[in-house]
Image (cartoon, rainbow, N blue to C red):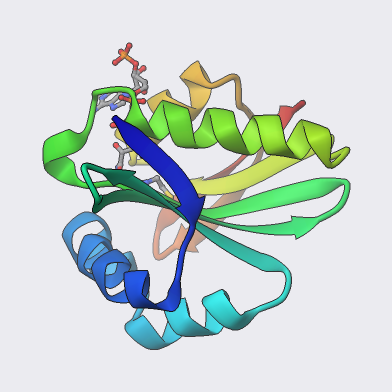
Length: 144
Ligand SMILES: CC(C)(COP(=O)(O)OP(=O)(O)OC[C@H]1O[C@@H](n2cnc3c(N)ncnc32)[C@H](O)[C@@H]1OP(=O)(O)O)[C@@H](O)C(=O)NCCC(=O)NCCS
């Protein structure tokens, strides 16, 4: 069983621990997470499994668009469909709010994430050269 809720400030420390586990040099600091939490355009959702924060999603709403900044699932719970549940909920909520496009940006070498987004129906919309050092960033889009 899992539930998806808006994060509370007390969840940010666990999200920060997950950032360190999942994103290495691209991790956000606790301060960045806190700033995002306070930003009125931003939302942070947490997925809790047996009461434990196991995944999170950070996005901003600029109707009619949403931009995803981060999605992460604790490594030991990956590949069990939880990331899919988070994105499905975002798509569902987006449709209710008349959102028509969801954008995100992913490092070209992050095949795990690329495959995940592709399976969720996102398509490469634009390639940004040398975005992450020498690496390309893929801007992906899903119309909902
Ligand atoms: C990307 C991420 C959120 C996916 O969450 P998840 O719960 O593991 O994904 P799901 O179990 O819902 O997988 C759905 C599909 O994504 C693809 N996928 C997920 N993990 C994959 C992997 N390691 N290798 C290849 N494809 C993968 C598969 O197509 C999978 O479907 P399948 O299991 O039926 O083959 C998770 O792997 C993660 O936290 N990664 C590290 C952080 C990150 O890179 N985030 C994205 C950039 S912001």
